[in-house]
Image 1 (tube, rainbow, N blue to C red):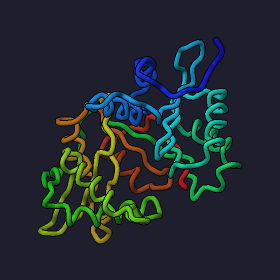
Image 2: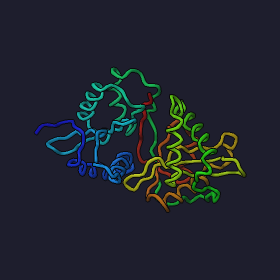
Image 3: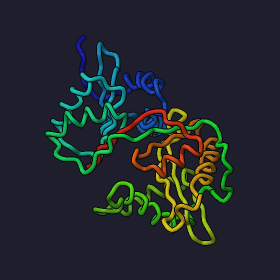
Image 4: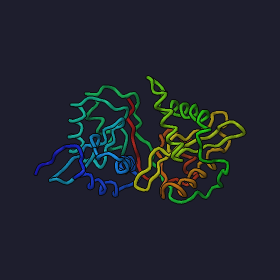
Length: 279
């Protein structure tokens, strides 16, 4: 049997586990997607997961939702996936994942998709599996819905600063508020206040295959440079390791030296490199 590209189904989804187990930190996006479907009350469906099969065996995969994510893709698989993406046209807001795979895939679709808004070619992926040796900030806690009116503006500010556009643009305010509310309710949101002022926040955006990926780390601008982030992040790591997953990860832009130094100080180690193409 020759190779083929097709959507995954209930008969082929079990083969995904082998791909995830090769590198759970790298593939936690995919693991979270699969685990979410398993928890659904509805018949499993995977129209957003495009597989590259060779003699009936799953070799590579492409997640094709709001974010395009290549998984274990070979050169020939990326060429096949690119052909499918070019035929469909761009519908995603980003391509994100292992740098070599993302940049090569982008090279193969860029002529058809038009220019990117930004290319972040080197984003260190960092992970930690034990509590930090640094002192923790005991004032960092899980957020609750009473914090939402403070938390939402901070999340919008951080997202806009990081991505370059507001998550509430084009009528997205309600959906974004719901997303933050979901993270709060799921105990995936962390905050620190000084008096009545929110000065630090972070979220766990993805959990899969025993890996919790942190996103949205933010210190209020006027409190930056005061040594808040290291003990706050050490506290976040402790809470996640105790309650959520045995591995904590994140990825960060290579030009963000302040963030990199913070994460290194906490005890995160550089384990991989991602790239992101933003549209």
